[in-house]
Length: 573
Image (cartoon, rainbow, N blue to C red; front, side, top):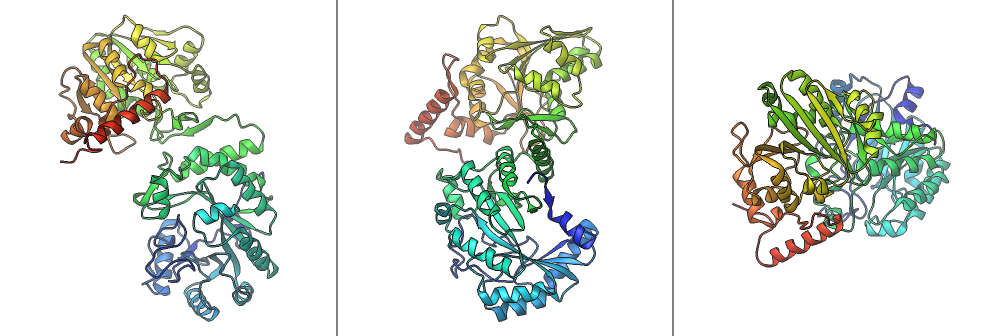
């Protein structure tokens, strides 16, 4: 497949518009679920993936009325519709029961197509004959639960059938003229890209008409949740999933109908993954990636347009964005410049010095240059630290960067100068710079990747080095509020406050050797977590040259020892 062909486009071609789905919960279960609700597939929620607004306690007419009201309000959609038998296994009953339920549901509105989610081991010959008769009145699609072609994985997730059952079911359905879509999950425990490709190759060899793919969601209360906590499975982030999905789809035949590309669930029920992107952002990014790969021009760089219109990049090594997807440009102002009150200092006519630890895409230095010109008084000197020289190159490739002149000056090997600002970039390990510099700074912007990914720049020892170069009335600001970092600040004698939340529930951290009256102080509960539980155990790097692996290994060992001595994992009031 070189071009994505979505189900809505297929429906529009057939019916003149994209039919909106009206979901039904028929009140059926699955063949390997017990009466007490236990059993079933390791990934499946208790409600069997039913639409959130439905309940099997509602009549089918009530379900239809609620579904129609929803699509009218949200999409302005009118009949005809598509009936979607979605939750659990929708052929898990005798044919007479299925006929009664289907006919009752299809009598509630004008439907032109029917989509039936089921399992390959719940399609008797009589059931398929009934579906074939239904297919003469409606366009019938069967959404067949495949998940993977790997029988070992199918056993591990308690699927209850092997891939041979899939091959048999799709061939029998196809022989009766019924279109079949394969439902596949990428990221199941133990699977790698080679497993994903093997599944795609087997699906491509069978008479499937469509694909419904999504990433594994680890949901609360499921066996998969226990597997996740035991380290048997890790969830794909949006970029890892996008790469795997693009490879997967490229193997499928052209004009395979794409029904879905990512999963939906109530965020409060999702343990992992915790994606940074919203669904719309992911789909936009994925389409760009897929089209670039199909054209042979994917360079591996993932550009993401954030909510304020500016762009950031994703770093595959750290598995994080350089800047917040809530707004790359806005983050510089909300997390650093505004809580530090840099502008007020400049307007007083002061000379201000800033150390920006983590150049990234350059948004902090661009904001500082803009701020200095806007203030029109004082003088701002900034030094930005960066290990990876390719970041500046990638920053220059970003569309609509707010101050390209700053980046171009830095890329030329010189510094950026204006009437009120001088900005330089220092390449190399920030730890070495901080350890060796004789300078002191009014403001420290700590903008490294997060402590669990880049612990080198969040240790107790690095914070101690930062304390040495921070002026007595200076301010340190960062987006992170991680407890090991809080512990490092507090144990170094910093007074800690919290900036206004932006892009996440909690605010960033602003610290100083004096009390910051203009910001709310750190909450007492957070202080005690940082100081009285292992959650706040700081990372260590005594010689400021340890590797990431050394730091993480040492931290894990110290936490284990503290737990053994009776220190709780979390402070509880």
